[in-house]
Amino acid sequence: MRQYDVLCAGLMVMDVIATNVTRAVFDMDTLHTKRTVYSTGGDALNVSMNLTKLGAKVAMAGCVGNDAAGLGILRQLDDAGINHDCVQVVKDETTATSMVLCEPNGERHFLYYGGANRDFDGSSLTDEALSQAKILFIGSFLGLPALEEGHLLPLFQRAHALGLMTAMDACGGSREDCGPETIRDVLPVLDVFIPSEGEAAVLSGESDPEKAIKFFAENGVKLAGVKLGKDGCLLYQDGAFLHVPAYYCETPVDTTGAGDAFMSGFLRGLTLGEPLETCARMGCAMGNSCVRSLGATTHNCSLESIRAIMQQA
Image 1 (cartoon, rainbow, N blue to C red):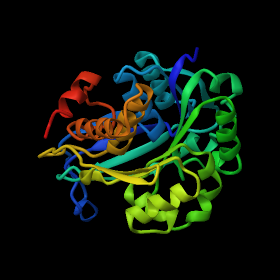
Image 2 (spheres, rainbow, N blue to C red; image 1 turned 180 degrees about the vertical axis):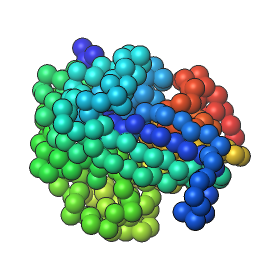
Image 3 (tube, rainbow, N blue to C red; image 1 turned 30 degrees about the horizontal axis):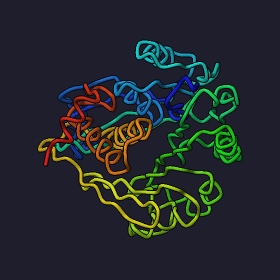
Image 4 (cartoon, one colour; image 1 turned 120 degrees about the vertical axis):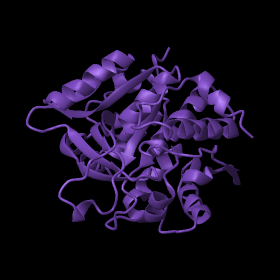
C-alpha cells in the first residue's frame, strides 16, 4: 500500500510579493506598494501545498537553507501535514528567495535567487522513499541544475521500475541557452508533461503549441500538453488533441503560481482516477482559484470549491 498520492520534488522558495508595482518603479526613489505578502513558493512546494488542500496525501523533497526562511518553510509543511523527510537542509547556503512584482493588472515579474535549490540533485529520493508514492512530480525542469546534470534520467528510470507515474513541469521559458536537446533524453520516461506555452516553445523549438506538443509526444511523452494561461490548456493523448478552456475571472489579483495550481488540480484528478477532460478542468479550476488571491498558495480551496467553479458554463 503506497502511503502518498504524490511525491513532489524540486523548487522550494520563500516569496516576497509586492502589489501595484508599475513599470515606472526604476525612475522613482520610492514606490509605496498597496500590499506586501510573505508566502511559500517554488513549483514543487506550491504543488504540494495545493494538493494537500484538495485532500491528497503528499510528500516533499528538495533543499532549503539553514536560515529563518528555510525553517519557516519546514514549519508550514508540518502545519499542512506534508511529509518532508526528503527535504535536505543545506548548511552553508540560503533558502531560495523570489521577489514578486505584481502589476495593477495582476501580471507578475520575478527577481529570483536560486540558493539551496541549486544543490538539489535527487539524492534524498531513495528507492524506499519513491516506493511510498503513486506519482513522482518534478517541479521544475530548467530550475534544478544539479538534478539536471545527469541525475534526472536515472531518477525517472528508477521511479518507473518501482511502479510510479512520472510527471514534470518546466520553468524559465525566457531562457535562450536551452532547446530540444536539453530535454530529449528524459522524454521517453516521462508520463505527463504540461509546460507553459513559452516553456514548450523553448524546449521543443516550435512556437506553435500543437507542434510543440507533438514534439514531446513523438519523443516519448505519454500525455503531453501546453498550459495556455487565460485560454486554458491543450492536451494530446493517443493521437488526439483536447482543448479545455479556462474559467473566467474578471479581475485577477495575482497570477503567481497559476501554472502550479493547474498542475495541482490535474494531478489530483489523476490520483482520483478521473478521465482526462475532468483532470484538465480540475486544473483550470485551480488556476482560477489561485489568481483570485495574492500569493501562490494563499487561496482557500478544496475539492468542493473547485467543483463549484467547474459548474461554470
